[in-house]
Amino acid sequence: MKWLLITLGILALIAGYSYITVSDGPIEPMGRLAFVKLANPDMYPGHIHSELLAKEAEATGSKCALVLQLYGGSNYRSYQEGNVYIIEVAFIDTQGMGSINMSQVNYLDSFKVALFGIPDGRYKYMSDGHVYDTYDEMMAHVNELAQEHGQEGPLPMFYKGTVRQGNPIITPGEGFPLYFQILTKTYGIIPAYVYTLSGMFAPYFNDPYRDFELKNASQLQDAYNQGLLNINYETDTKGNKTALQYYKQLYENNSQSYDSA
Image 1 (tube, rainbow, N blue to C red):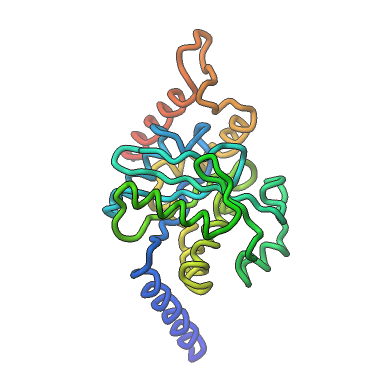
Image 2 (spheres, rainbow, N blue to C red):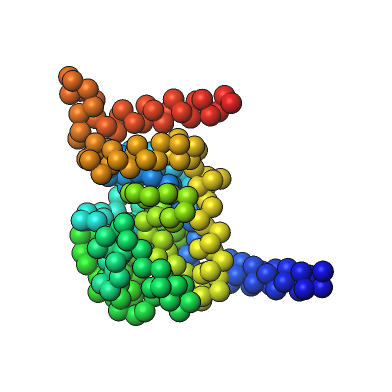
């Protein structure tokens, strides 16, 4: 009992220290956005995950939000979604397997990163069609965009979290390592642990489509990997409905069923 109380006390101190450290900082960690892709591209005006991100950011009183991804060939253009300007950043892992093959995970490498943080110079970053060689250059770009679009107070930060294959409950998804790096650089490794781990549970509370995503994860992943979720993919024989429209109707039907349950 004594050791249990001591352990709980230590955890409370860690959580309290982390909360105080982050509460007065420039970045507001919002955690994971979603579990699987619902259409491609997903960080795109009008996509339901994009609208969800904007809604969450606007609820904090922010005019901007930062979303983190894994580089996959896009230009990662920032854009306006309603009243929120969404800043996109993807990381390119120059040393690990993450940006080479998403089906492989180097657990020893992940453990080292968790213990010591991301080594300087390991990542490059893509945002708005430009590759930034250093963390400081990338963050300067992010801060400049936020300032230009009227951001006041801490900038809400999400990592996209979608998983292209495998179990989305176990795998944290796209943008997770960069989320950890930014928190480590901004607040130190202890708050980074606390907010990265707690942020993994955000979709369970904030994503109204979580049940649909998790129940249909394998089908959605297969559809994405075959290009069937691309917004220009015709989903009926007449060719007058895009995948985005088709799946958005499924989301709405699922949401109505969920709300009435």
